[in-house]
Picture 1 (cartoon, rainbow, N blue to C red):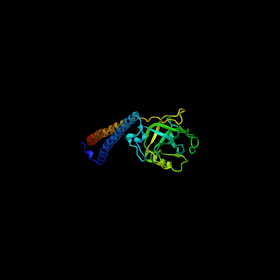
Picture 2 (picture 1 turned 90 degrees about the vertical axis):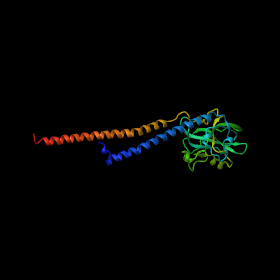
Picture 3 (picture 1 turned 45 degrees about the horizontal axis):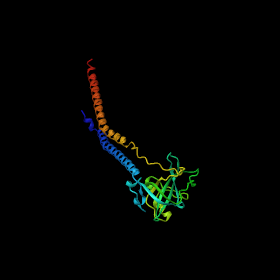
Picture 4 (picture 1 turned 60 degrees about the vertical axis):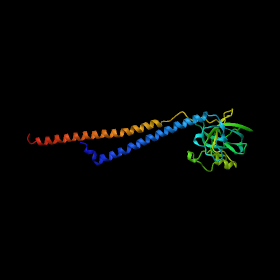
Length: 265
């Protein structure tokens, strides 16, 4: 009754189904693991934002790569802003998605080292190659608070470019700025949270999104349902093929019987 499943066409169809099932199961687990990483990242960000600020030098040093567990950690630093080596970071968006620049100003510490401070967002002019209007930072010694971030690299999704206008960069990278400053720069950078300018410029950078979890779990369930549907679909096709073959056999038998009785009539 089911010998047709041994034909070349059905063997190929069965092999395709057997390949699809583990592939879909694996894709489901891939999306599930992405969901788990997103949940863990949200919990880490929430915990680090709520933690008491610590001196930035206690978490990083020149050449240090900020680990995932220290990112978004509240830190403090005391020093003087070095506006002579201030740069702006191209292709950055404001909290309402307007395109402009981030203002990156070194803060010189008492021990001779520096830490990069992202003071916030400013709009660009009509010409993207011209330097934007940047409000000056506070003069004299200041104590700032911010979120510790890891150095940006081309591998983080931002393409570095050469031949940019003077005092413009694509990446916030302590190694690159250390060469320009000629002094040790703490690894990573500080995203300023206070004190913020009274007039709102540069515009402060908002808290990172740590509430949404995306649709990864829904995608995982979809892939697993697809995997479960493959054998069900295969069985439905087999039963349909059997019915069609039985119907064709009955029709052929009836036609043959009709031809045999025709001369007698």
